[in-house]
Image 1: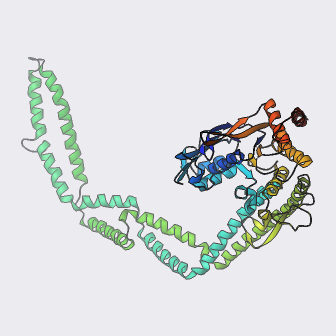
Image 2 (image 1 turned 90 degrees about the vertical axis):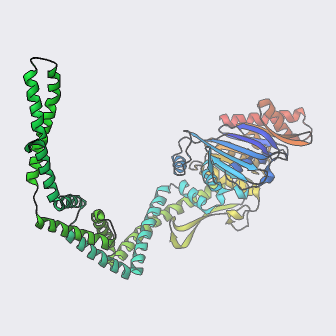
Image 3 (image 1 turned 90 degrees about the horizontal axis):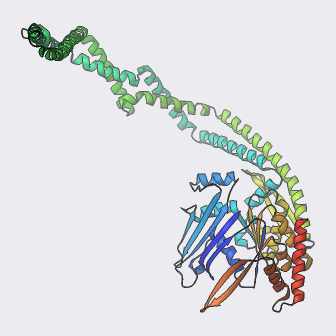
Length: 558
């Protein structure tokens, strides 16, 4: 629901901070006081286009911020996550800044956002009924979704959508195969030849490391043997071998240690050196024994390396990546394998089409049943809203070609008066009629509608008396399931509200300013009396207003 609305320097509003309540809230006030300005400001926050003319004269920019409570809305949380616009849990903040130059910026949860994103998000949060440019019910997709939700067809609609996508994917695969059959055949032939050649090479990245190491050892075997022999000569086998010299020093010191114990520390330092030198000699001797001059093996290794390098140059990859290339070629060959048979692809496509048609026919049957029930309920509501003889049809028009949403288009058709042929809802000329029809539809579908906040403008145009009282009752009932705001000029409609706000304007220093104030019971009586009596308010009028308000209160408690 809508928690709060903050407006700065917008049209005739300088500063305005409103905190909203659940249930039904009526906005009343003199004509021209700025009641519709609040709705227009909300529409701007939710992505409506506009220009710098809405900035209050003398101000640099208009700033509008709307805060919504969004708990238990997983589909909304998913949308915000997909668009990287998440906020703190349970809250969603939309802000619109419009410069006097016409430039505007939008923000969602403090992050810059496009107007398209604001409009997409707004569809989850709020629906404005009355003005054509704000009316989501005029869209075919909304009408279809509303009918599906009303009839409990959402799961079946999702099944149809999934079957459609599967069918289209298989159809595209079949068309692609038929269009590119020769190219695919040539590609398969090349892949098969490449895979056979690389399989025959039987090369791996592990072998590459082993070959490099072995080749380095074999090609430098003579130098390695010579270096090992030299090391053993210097360390232990030569006349002045290092190990012999160290042993001699240690022997002389051991003979004299009894005369000076301080020599023992030096012996302790020499002992590890003797051991390490001896270990080095053993290691060199062992290493030399393993070395061997093997020209035949060297030739074999060089031939293998040449074969690997030749393949790498041919396929234009580093030698160590030949194994990875083989894996990719095999995978691509497997991808092309199912397409080797055009008849098989056609069969898969036909199977998917049959599944889609079966699911779509189930959806059509469910929609027909829901359309009949919805039409009856909306027509009944219209009769109570000064549209006696009016009709409503949730019409299902068969499509020439199947679509992702089924075999038919859903279109709401209405006639506000008897004797007039039903026409699409978008062609309803009167804003008041459109708003009341919207009210009738929302009342009929309120149990399944997902948008939490509904705003009605001009809902009372051209009605009064008993019909106005019925409109108020319907709005009050709708407010039990949704947050409802209604701009009204009728006392009967205002008296039915859970809360009432008065919109007024005042002039100071040549500047007109709009104000909004919540009314307590006494203030509501006075405002309803004004709506009943006009300029001069008598005690009789006030008594009538109090009775009207009290009667509405009793009906709320029943």
